[in-house]
Amino acid sequence: MNIRDGFIKANKNGRSCTLMNVHIGKHATAGEFFQHDERRPRDLLLHKQEARRLLQKTDRMPGMTVVPLKAYWNDQNKVKFEIGLCRGKNVRDKRQDIMEREGKREANRMIKNFNFR
Image (cartoon, rainbow, N blue to C red):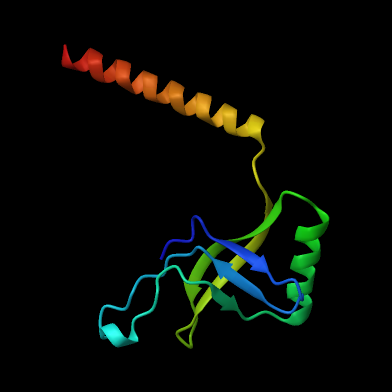
């Protein structure tokens, strides 16, 4: 299961939410007929008030999104997701991360070249 690129989209009617772009692998013991698409959208079971609250918070504040933070199995063998409201990075933050990553790559390149000579 990969929830890294996942996000939760609240429907415009405010009654339900859908989990998007989460990879849940196929079952190893089931036949081909009973398999599912790994990245299909999945409806979340939320109370109507929770779904409306998430829709209001994402609509009022631009740049806010709802993401899955943690996934676990409950006692009834169902997948549960812990979700959170977060703010995306802006361009300045991305540039800073890219500069740090490039600096680390350059340092690793220098160490690798130094060790081989």
